[in-house]
Image (cartoon, rainbow, N blue to C red; front, side, top):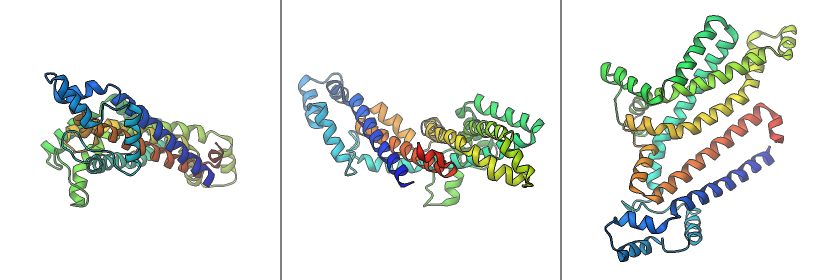
Length: 313
């Protein structure tokens, strides 16, 4: 197991290096135009050159990346070109907001999807049809539309939740819960549809296997067969889909954060892109890559726990 973990960690480190190198190359490749966009199109050549020297953009790209990498290894991702704030500081507050949404959505998705998937596979009939209908709705209705309806119904008409804003969990847990409930609900709908379909399909396939009939013939309780054996085997593929949904939510949260005016990574990404704030954009790329690597590692470990054969891959 230790060898399995070491292999996965090393693969993650290599992936992080490759992602950072590619992102840096794409963002900093046209250094001359970067400086001109920052000082304005009406600036003189001398002003452009001065700005390039100030930011170190006049140096070879390899040298720029090496300096960034050595600083990044010490936790210094640079400063914003617009407000001078450390990129790490900018990310830390925003990251907490986005992770609150994404982790909350993942937990809700996992619980609801398991319940619906198992019910659909075991009961069949109208229960299965109802779950299938809900899944189709989840795939068909865009998340931003669900978010707008949730705001209209539960925030504006009923007044149960605030329409916008975010309360840190350290400041007030009830306030935090109230501020993230509607965004999590909006993000969960589509994710639940995808994971439910995977669990349902795996459960139906598992329940038709010979080993299930053998277990039943030995007198094992149906509940034990379903939850201890069939659901365990269906967990691997479901975890893979859940990981994909988690990663997709990092990007999908951009629109939902905008609708609910949440100060998360999505809002920072839009802001940095509009301002051409490349240090912040690089920080966002690195933060996202680290999250993706950690999620994949956790999913790999979970799958290895469910299926020892995975450890040999």
